[in-house]
Image (tube, rainbow, N blue to C red):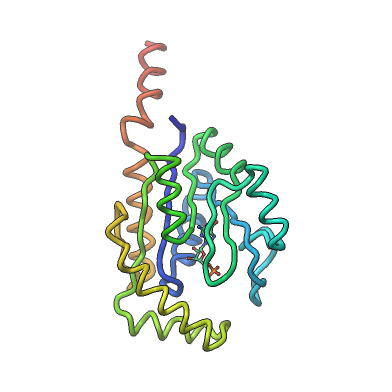
Length: 203
Ligand code: 5GP
């Protein structure tokens, strides 16, 4: 049993999950560790190594899988994405809440490895809004956008596999919603019982 809780956040591309999580991390810095994934995709303008992702070659990625350094991985839009195992295990052991922003396949695999993980799915207010947001980002080619919209439809169909669903209409509200889930999880008896024992032992 880990000391910290593990939160998986998934959403179709363009739902604003990265922004929501970034704001939550900012507000709860001392309590949260945000996992930085590894990917073989190209770095987008504005992204930085070790901040958004660790960018590696396909060969390096495969080596990391072989050596057990990747907790889970998936192929999305033709690129590999994976969660580095070490930091996640260390931060959970230190009692922090660890957040993984990963796609639905990875979410399912994490639940197999960590049955106590809490899965949160972020949805857009409508498909039209999602399309507008994806195009407005201006960072992807038309073909990439089309493929992401197609994947988005399939991903939305899997929201039922999640423990919570948050609608990202007004950002501040979505941020509050995610914080509520993280807090409620942290005060569950399974995480607090050691604290109770400490109180009793020192009585
Ligand atoms: P993007 O290229 O837009 O940054 O990410 C594409 C998709 O890959 C998103 O749904 C994102 O959440 C997911 N993703 C990012 N890192 C990981 C990871 O480590 N594992 C898995 N399974 N998916 C990831």
